[in-house]
Amino acid sequence: MSERSGNQDIWIINSMDYAEQSSSLTQLTNNGSNDHHPAWSPDGNHIAFVSDRSGVDLIYTIFPDGTGLTQITTGDVNDSHPTWSPDSSQIAFSRDDEIWVINADGTNLTQITSGSVEHYIDPVWSSDGSQVAFTKSLYVDEVAIMDKDGSNQEVITTSGKDKLPAWSWKTNKLVFVSQRNDTGFGIRIIDTNGSNDNVYIDNEETYIGLLSLYRNHHH
Image (tube, rainbow, N blue to C red):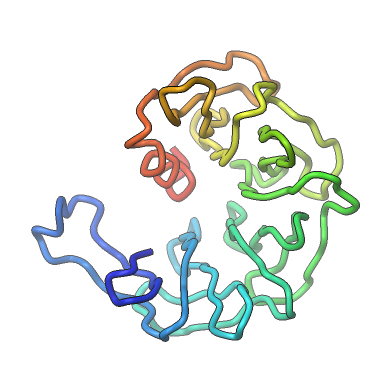
């Protein structure tokens, strides 16, 4: 996402194009609305994103060449943080502080959490599609996991300052943003049972890029 056009739009750039020296930058959306939170499907065929072009934030998909724009969710409440299932058939997202799942063609909308006191946001799928990690937020932020149907919820961090989980599909560990000291944000890595909670990188200038890499490429 970039605001270089005057509003938030979705752009693509080659990951090896340092400082845009190879001129690989391509603008995908140019609607005059705010388009943000892009998420590339694991099969590489679609990009999901959030847009307020209808007046509220809803989820859309588009082909990587900028064609095939499709509205996935409808309604008058804001949706956020779309994330693809491993087989690219479903999208999980946040709505009204709960986690929902919808088929990639916009059918079979299903609410998988309900009655939550906290805000349930930032969902991300496990590599086998059986679980979803998310941020559980109210007065504190913690990383939690649950089965894909919303059952067996378990909080796996305890500092109160952890959020934005990303599932490593190669190691089946979770990486997440943490702010456990006064030096700023950093990245930590943890087993899905809550053990082996360790610093991965402690640099507030790079945490956003690193989490974006994990959430979109599933290292």
